Length: 212
Length: 212
Image: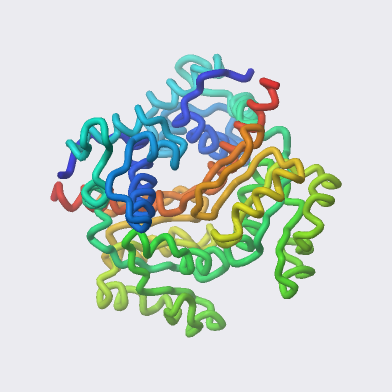
């Protein structure tokens, strides 16, 4: 099922397909056309067919895709069916927002631990989970089989937190701090930069204005 | 300076270039090579040269790019030099995290208003701005010349907020709510889906495991 050489752009679209298929499943839809999928996602049907044919045949020609089958397959490709356990480090506003983000659970991620260094925050319950002390990080990551660490601490502390996560045996880091982070090649790193979305919007507004 | 037919992938990389150039500028660097830029961003020098040549000549062959000139040009392309005024709607944890996000200011966006419907939240001061009542949205958007609305409300309220923003004459919406939103073609919409980053990480971890 796993394919090599999937483009980054396609990998970025797969979670959108997965989520749309899940919503379609909830609506009781069995078969969905590339036109309907495209309309729900603002992606052309041609692009969708191109993305999905690279993974094999899930469609019924002239009718559409089998929702359950396609969703399961995309979940397999993305590794979502592993139901990774995740931890959020840094329970400020961003960390708390991430801990409460409903979409993660619906994508198959299990939030199982929260960490902070602030005595005022340790012990608080957020999203049904008690915030742990950073000094217990390694022990809890091992005990709870946590694969993914989400870094939501201020920039100046981010590398030190990453080092602790690596030392604790984490497999992936999702970093929200605006820093260039160094981790060993064995640990997967995805940097989330919120200013990218806002800059894209700025670009679109500028282009629209120029063409008016 | 404005170019047509810039790929979405290139537009997504431009803010990363802009930010890295800004940091280089802060460090007093006048000329930067595509190798150094690439190393700071985990992007190949070939990709960087390809992205940047499409906008014209900013480099000194065999030496590197002029930092100030290239940064100003990318800022022009992205429309960042317009210094858009923005408002955040929904001051829960996500809204408060966004209001406090330092990177927006450094990219040239001015946060000038915050809105909520909750009487407990209206009047609070977040990031030096007093939270306004949603009933004053249209008036404040006009008075403060706000171009971009950031939607950080729960999913079920997101479309109604978007409708109010459109009615108030907003030019761009940056939507964090996990819903398919309808806005007129004259309003630019960028949907931010945080589960995409986490799913990408899941994919990388799964691929790494498979290849071990």
